[in-house]
Image 1 (cartoon, helix red, strand yellow):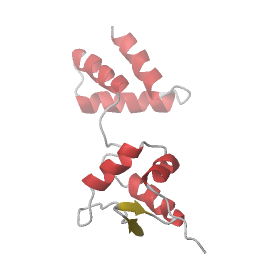
Image 2 (cartoon, one colour):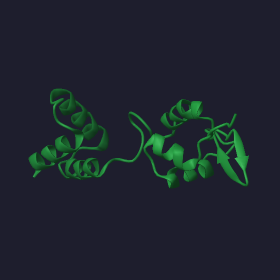
Image 3 (cartoon, one colour):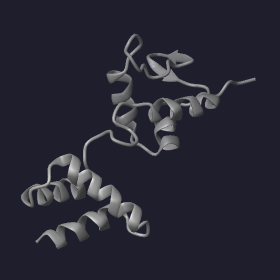
Length: 124
């Protein structure tokens, strides 16, 4: 019976990212790092392969990346514009973040980019 493995392209497609992203993850998070990318189950002529059952493990790994989730990561373009407008009105970053979170709770039907644009418009 032939064993089937997933390559970098298969993993990228399953996780909704580019093949380049998977290569970057492997390079940035090698074995021995604080958050190592799951090691391949097989390697043939330098090409890694993972069992399909490990996709869930890889999704959990990705969810644990630094900067993912609440409070992490780089602000979006809409957030950056909002923070600039808030600073021009005298709000520091914490005050602006609390205000944005309050409005997000009050207007759950609005997406964050819509909310940021609306607030920027109100500031001008």
